[in-house]
Length: 344
Image (cartoon, rainbow, N blue to C red; front, side, top):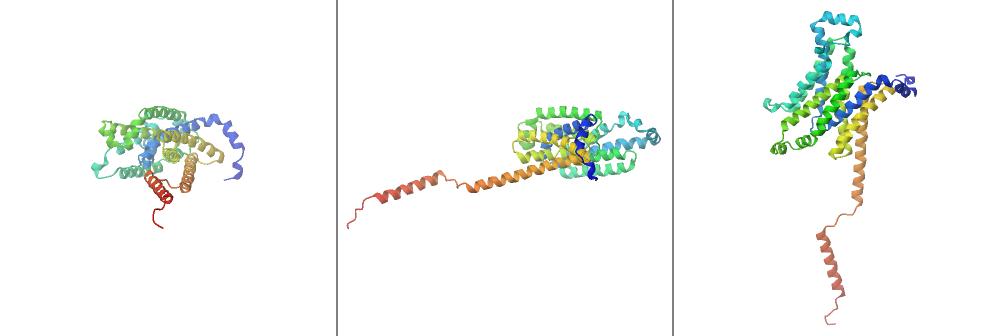
């Protein structure tokens, strides 16, 4: 990269062109906040790669929305490209990429909601199946559509700089609705995640709560993948939660920190990518990784400080041993002060 391309005027250029990039910045911040909050459940339930599998399924759905119209009507599709890029601004609602992404994501979530024990399989194996099928399908379908290869690359890796207004509206609506639902069911979701058997004993709707969690993950991942790409979506759903858990073990504070870290990763990653002329999605993911690394280093430093304090403190004395020590000292003192009665 040319060193002259990184200049102090880049920040002023970003500010001067803020009207162009504000939708992308808002979308990145809202997506980071939404996925950071939901990602705490993902990390605590040890289904980290579920968000990655759902993101891959959403990417496959978007790729299919480009490929299926060309497969059904290749002449009309080619004529649309020959007419210019404006011919694809108003596609048929049936082939809207957002709808296909949502449908593919919800279909993937059915795998996690269902009980794979009946098939003599584990949930982790089904997760790997969804990830591999979706990833392979996205690559194969992407090879078949040459005209939209740039759009598909932006969806898979988040290299798009400008976000469409409709995508910003959808991400904003998902943030309000899904975050509101999670805040309303926060205690119930935490209890079901920690103690599902106890929740069933108390007659809580465990299956319905798990279905809400998986469906919310699917919707959030689908809408954010369409706007930002699969790579930053996976990063936002994992890294902020891990960063918050490294800082504190208070569950309420973990959710707050994960939301803030996710929003900061999205906005700061976009700014850094503009400043350094780097891919947006990869830079946003790297920003989250840097914050997680800093949190882990802080955790290591604090653990070493606690160990040093523990070594420097005297060992605690129990009440029983203290009583025995006091009585023994008193006995020795009385013996030493008692007069001698034996004959000289």
